[in-house]
Each structure stands twice: as C-alpha cells, then as structure tokens.
Length: 124
Image (cartoon, rainbow, N blue to C red; front, side):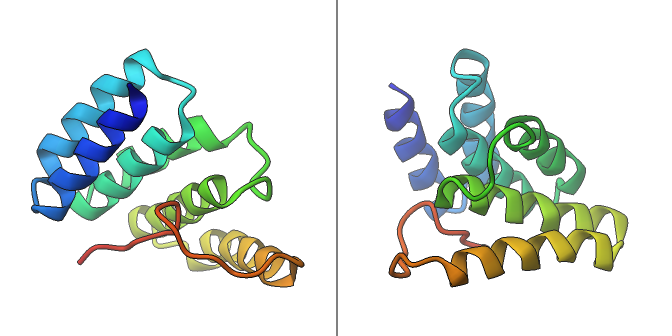
C-alpha cells in the first residue's frame, strides 16, 4: 500500500500538485511511520514548496537514527535534510559539511554509480 501512495504522490508532483502530494504523504506517514521512501518523498516535496523547517523536521525525525551510508534513499533524504537546513538557517558550513561527507563516501564506494527514483531530484 505504501508503494501505491508513493507512486500517486510522485505523479501529483510531476503534475505540479505538490500540496496534494504532501497532504497524502503526511497522512500515509501516520500509518507507515517507519517508511523511509515516504519520508524522503515528503521531505523533498516540502522542500520544493519552500517549507524548509518542516522538511528538516520530517527528514531529521526519520533519518536521525539510520545509517546514512546504508543505502541511496537514506543518503538522499539526509542530503535533502542538510540542504533544507541550509535554506532555513543560512548556516552554510555546518549544513554542507555533512553533504560533502555523504557525497565523498558514495563516490569512494566500490559500487557502480546508479540513478533511480531514490536519487535526489531538486524541482524548480
């Protein structure tokens, strides 16, 4: 069920209906509170809407206890969280040092670089 909600939310975002997508994702997270994909999509959608503090909270609550280097979805959520924090606080160094650390770790990994739905997609 969570994957269906995620698919619908992404479709709404593609149509520019970010508020509807955020509403559906927030409702879904009440049921699927541990679903990282839903949290990352919600964080990204909130970031797109300019709700940087809310994006930081959603992603911080979800990503805070996870190993950021365990998979691309967690890493993407952590990067969005850092950039949202940068936008809300204006603190460049503290926000971007973590992003650089995540980037360097994935660049140094032995795995081939892949791009999929879990990759950070900044919408403008």
